[in-house]
Amino acid sequence: MKKLLENRNVTGWLMVSPLAAVLLVFLVMPIVLIVIVSFWRATEFSIIPAFEWDNYAFLFGSPVTYAVFLNTFKYAFITWAFTLIIGFTVAYYLAFHIRSLTWQVALFLLCTIPFWTSNIIRMISWIPFLGRNGIANSTMMSWGVIDEPVEWLLFSDFAVILAFVHLYTLFMVVPIFNTMMRIDKSLIEAARDAGANGAQILWNVIIPLTKPGIMIGTIFVVTLVMGDFITVRFMSGSQSANVGRLISNDIALLQYPSASATAIVLLATVLITIGILLRFVDIRKEL
Amino acid sequence: MEPRPRSFYVLSAFFALFVLFLYGPTLTIGILSFQGEGGGLTFPMRGVSMYWFYDLFEQQAVGDIWGSFRRSIILGLMVMATTVVVSVMGGLAFRKKFAGSGILFYLIITALVIPSILVSLGVGLLFSQSGLNVHWSTSGFGAQLTWTLPFGLLIMFAVFNRFDKSFEEAARDLGASPWQTIRHVVLPIIAPSLIGVALFGFTLSYDEFARTLLTAGSYNTLPLEIYGMTTNVTSPVLYALGTLTTLFSLLIIGGFLALALLSNQRKARAGSDAGKGV
Picture 1 (tube, rainbow over the protein chains, first blue to last red):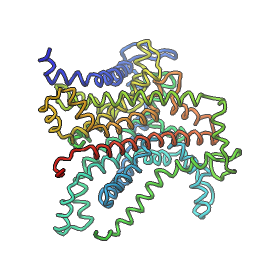
Picture 2 (cartoon, one colour):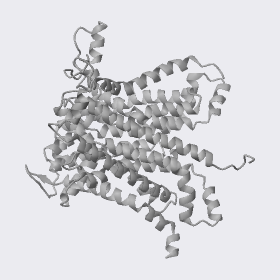
Picture 3 (cartoon, chains in turn purple, blue):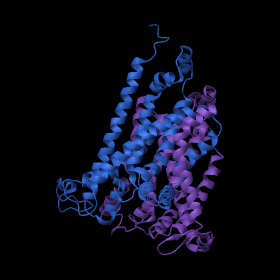
Picture 4 (cartoon, rainbow over the protein chains, first blue to last red):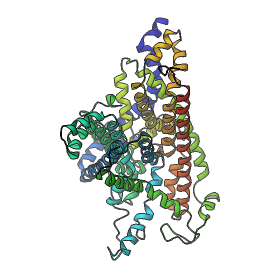
């Protein structure tokens, strides 16, 4: 018995067993079940165990699917570009322009606090800004930029992307800031001594050394946007669709098999994307 | 100190705009929740009043705000406690590099990147197919853990990567048992980070929407209740509720941050005096 407890595999698994149990019951089994159900048949009131490819055939046979997947990638790409530029700039400012650690921590916390508040409230809070009689429209009208209210501010792709950027830029700031803080400042001095100007230091020293943080932020933003269904539904006023909404619409109609098939294709897409991104970074080393 | 370069001022302005972008909308609904009785969802303010806050405490035509608030707090505390305990155990276990830890690590990453609606759908199906009823304290609880545990573990990995193992060796050399080493050496050192894990556990659960959507059953949590309101409530009462729950979140965050600050100070005071010539 004593010998058994000295074996690191045994004690390791004993200590990790609660974690493993949660992941097994609430992650692995649900995924397996979704795979199984995706082959089932649905009637109007119930789902019947079966093994048929109909759900997938329908999914891949419908032009809507391709349009919706394309739209999902479009959201992911545009949001990624904006969050990267904004997140990198903010992290760079905090890491290299703020000189005292206390201020760095304080300003960093200022950026992260919204992450711990409700996403839904943060989406709702755009209504008074973007609405037909909202702040944006009335300001632009008083400046004479436009003559009548612009209709596409709220309930449009613009609003969706704005909300995504608003919600998820933090996921870029945090990992990039974390990597930047670990850059040895003497490297930057060395570059300056060797005659590099600010732009050259940024491009040839800081950006290459920040790549792991950028990759981790990218993984977060891309997966959050690709898996989203609520932001798109709320901010587009149900006028735009992404894959998540396709799934949630099927669920609302109790079409679980077809929702499952779409979910599996979405999961595969996300995992392939992550797999490609993980080729550029070793997450365990970066923590 | 060398003088600030011009880029400092440009970037400062950019940062200020970013903070305004982050907080502006929330502050706006904070102001609009004091809208007068006849006011609408946007400016102008028609008087200033507490009307919509009082309205929240009246009997609601739809939903059960206070019940859902209570459920969200209880669920948040459950998730928080579980996340802290399981993450610490997991973090300690992963240091041993046991066989199969690689697979488990990839499962954790999967839990982090999997679209939330899959968890909701899968857990919902699992419960319905095994004849169990979905309930916020069982299926909802488990579904939320798949989101909070990866964050807790990532924090623990980061903590243990920076952990100086010589403290433990010293304890062992002085005859401490493995349990005593953890209880009296490891836990006190990592305590401030545990406050961070607890903060993530509570707030991520308190605000979670997608994972509880199909797993909460007939009793809503607060985010589900708020989402329900967005489809049929078109008065500033929505803002009043938003303002109250944001204030509650800020209170919780402030409490945790103060706690972290205190424990850091205590650690600094009670820390080692080695090498200081005392």
